[in-house]
Image (cartoon, rainbow, N blue to C red; front, side, top):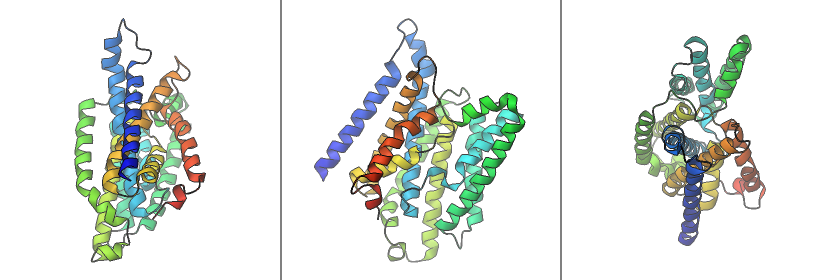
Length: 313
C-alpha cells in the first residue's frame, strides 16, 4: 500500500511540476519575457495553485461530512452568492474590487444557509436543500440583472465563467488568506477520519456532531470564497479532485489533505495552460476548460468496475 501511495504521489508531483513549467514558460517571448512572467504568468500560477487547492479541499470536507460522493463546494449556495456579489460590483460600482465582492458574497451566502439550517437541529440534508434553494433564487436574480443590462452582459458572463486575469486581486492578500486557511484546515483534518464513521459511535452527543459539521462547512465556505476571490466561479474541480484522490489513495484524510492540494493545483494549472493556448491567441474561459478536462476522467472513474460509486463508505 505504501508503494502504491509513493507511485501516486510521484505521479501527482510530476504532473504538478510539468503543468507549472508549461504555464510559466510555454510560448514565452524572450524579448519581454521577464515582464510577462512578473505581471501575467506568475500571478496566474499563484491564483491557479490557490484556487485549485481550495476547491479540492473544500470538496473533500463536504464529501466526507455528508457521506455524499457528489457533494460540491458550491453546495451551500456559494456559487450564486459569489456571482451575485460580482454582478452587483459590475453594475453599481464600476467593476471596482469585483473579486472582493464575490468573496464576501460567497461568505454571506454560506452564513445565511448555515443560519437557516439551524444550529440545534442542524442536518446535512437540510443544509443541502436550503443551499439549493438559495442557489436557485440567487441564480435567477443574476440572470434577471444580466437581462436588464445587455450592454454589460458579455463582461458579466465572461467574469462569471472564471479566470485569472482580474487585476483587482493582490497576490500578497491571496497568499496570506491561503496560508491562514491551510493552517486552520490542518488543525481539523484529523477529525475527518472520525467523521467518516457513524458519528454516534465517535462523539458523545448530537450537539458535538453538529458542531463539527458546522466547523467543516465554515472551512469549506472560507476555502471556496478564497477561490472565488482569485478566480471567479469555477465548478467541477471540487467534485472530481477529492473523488480521484480518495479512489487512488484510500480514506486517510491526513494523506488526502496533501494529495488534494496537488491534484487541485495541477488541474487548474493545466486548464489555465489549455485556456491560453488551445485557440491561441484567443483565450477560452477557464471554467469551460476545467469542465472539458475533468469530465472525461470523472466519467471514466465513475463507470469503471470498482470505481467511485463502489468505493464510498
